[in-house]
Length: 220
Image (cartoon, rainbow, N blue to C red):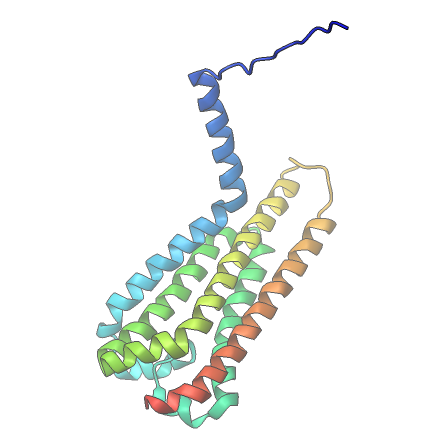
């Protein structure tokens, strides 16, 4: 029995086609991860600025801002596990709730980068203050006790800011009449995502308070 075999050769893409596909892939990438990348960069800029400015802040200012920046070690140590948890989670919660509410506001997009910057600024101030005040001991303390929970909470905040920006865009398109669908499902996903990041932040605070109680006494 004889058969006919057909061979298909994949046509080689031209340079113009590859460029179009690359632009399309870039747009998809930016649409999906652009917000996360933007807020991550803004947070890093704030961290750098906070580290550089920590030496110029007065001791009284640092004491008053300890609620956000973790600089008053004796006061925090006296609070025990519950005090360490409340101090860590309360400040993280403020940033999360601010990001959540700004996502529901028509002018919230202008504030979202400031939230990321100020969070990074606080992290930088804490790190810079501990290193300048306590030297190597402060650096080891920061890395082993504070950094694990701070890193997790910052990642959760960045993703929360990303979904907040996406919801803001959806609301804006709906208001301008560019989409005909409702916002019910979008808002439902937004609430679920925000709740997930809140749980992650809560867990990070629990871990942070455990590290604080278990290790802080070895340094201070």
